[in-house]
Image (cartoon, rainbow, N blue to C red; front, side):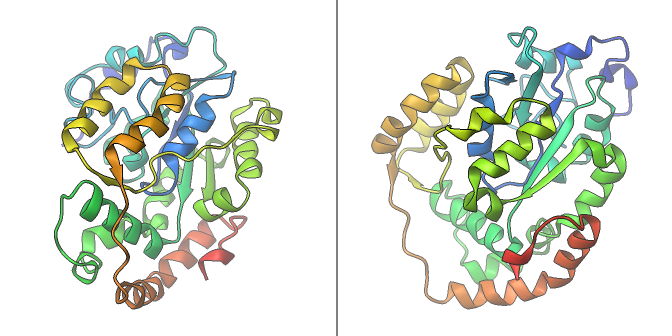
Length: 293
């Protein structure tokens, strides 16, 4: 059920209380690292937690204290209460790309947020998600072949299906799309392009140390991991950066080796995505998708 009550969208609300930059997708495309890299910029103030899930389509364990279904924008604004006069106020909830609540409400926010999307070759993204759910969160036990056949999960790689509506709602001037492959190949150039899009000084990233976050590793203690997620909002970003390597030494193990048969399934899936990749290219003609071929 979609909320339609417009009072939740702050017609009389100070836009400086709301984010004017949102990383809205996609999952398993490097958005955790991107969140920390952008948060490090002196002109950008990020929400204390990466993924607020405020505009999720349902209430979950991440957004029980603030969500669009049962709360107001005043609750959302608390994530940015310490931003003061920062030119850019940022949050990053990767699944927003798929949420109807996010699509309906983010473009209408008084702060007119610019929205960034990072996209990964669809079959590789889904395989990364599979290994994350199988070996890190341990939510599933099925093999890759079974997982890759699920229609709902396959649809998530049809980026054009979702982005055509985001583009229509935001307009080209408020949307920036980058590929995960470009972000990995030339991180500095990709993030500098995002900085220019957001109107902050890109020179900050010329000498910045790009540390990766949220790489898929096997978690030893789910309880410790859940506790870490709860405490994250209370820990400054710089301290999170310093503590991450220590945490990973304590609570992260090696991922199991990839099954030799998985590669053939991924290759077949990649062919199935060819039509949707062409649709994405038509939607964003300047987006370099050659690495997806």
